[in-house]
Length: 375
Length: 240
Image (tube, rainbow over all chains, first blue to last red; front, top):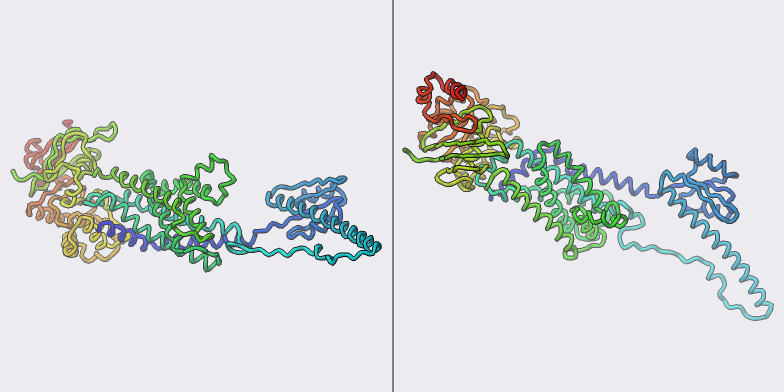
């Protein structure tokens, strides 16, 4: 009964704080829209290549590559000057039968793009040389066959036509990119960040204004306070998750394969973990400003290890840190639901770990409130 | 002797190495107002926190209604008002009252009646539906007192209840406190205002973590051979 009264009171306070409420719902949508634009529009890299003494076929093959512009230079010195003037991103020079490549390398993605384009160009020109040679040999062969009076089999040019390639995507379409990968993690991040900060601040305010003391001077149980906060912030997090998901689906047209309800469940769990975290951390903060100072310590590492930066590329001991990052589990689970349509039953591990976080932190909080009342 | 409500015997309280309460002996009986006076840092708030069970005594004994504190259930019978206003600013006065009434476990059907009564005592009936953020300092103080009065507690523990309240209202508050006493309820009150100490039934002088003197205001004045409690206070401090 008291639990519900506390939850009702916390919700009422929150609803009256219009600015915070607007921030909670509008800020994530604005950021997601921005990120959507940044990552989907500029997913290709345009590179300018300068070539010196490179064969014609390699040059044309390079030119035919998308997003590559080729300028021919007579000498290496000219090309070098252009490179220094930022007119081109790299130089390809042929020395005897070998190639020398020089990269500005100020943008590693451009360097990679040039490497790829050049490799393809060389291979393609090699193939076309082979093709023309093959055509010659075939012609010669046919000539010999005709002379010897034998009937050539009707194979003709069927081998020469290149096979048609059709792409099928299990999830999304050809535009699916980095943004789709980070979106499930981002939803969790927003929920975690806002619930952590606002709940931490709210409890801090209760402490500094004295209302916590007054509350504890009534027969209320410590657990009733913690559970009351859980109910109210749980409701808030559910609303926030729904708004974010609807915004991404309607405004950005992101495909959600699985059940949206499952995503809400996962994020509700994450929000409760964030709440417990916020309440716990707030006991170490003496003021709102000190609470903000915990953001670099608590929130930023979560971003690094959440999976936004691929964990596979990290050293194994660094990877081990991700075990204690709640957002990683919600990110994994939400990714599985959004992209593969996974059901809650198949996400037992992620849900289990989040529940473990929740139980441990909640118990710590209930014990922690002993600081303010000894029973 | 009438029934003892609060009984503190040889109470010792330490925070780390600092001993805040050395040896506090204090009793509050039914139908009695006990004033606790002393300079800042003498340990008045610590006495109150130990009485409420927010802190545990390191030595000695603190009993309320015959039970050793801390005891959570007993808190339902105590009305507490802290030094800070401790109100939810974004809620209205009525919402604050009704929230704390629920927390105290006031029966649902009598909540409204309790709120009306408490508001009338502190003269806030007309402002109950306004948000607390729009209240003046004095109004906040009165609302805070009203919350302590909710549920007709048998014991009131008031930490500096009349700070920031204008004289007319202060008089009204004291009239109500005397009425509560006459109903047979007990009140423990801390104050800085010495002439308020004259309005209590017994005064405890807390100095350096010890109760230096504990008697009726008149007897104290007699004992120290001075005219006012303020002089008693100064003399006690001077002797020390």
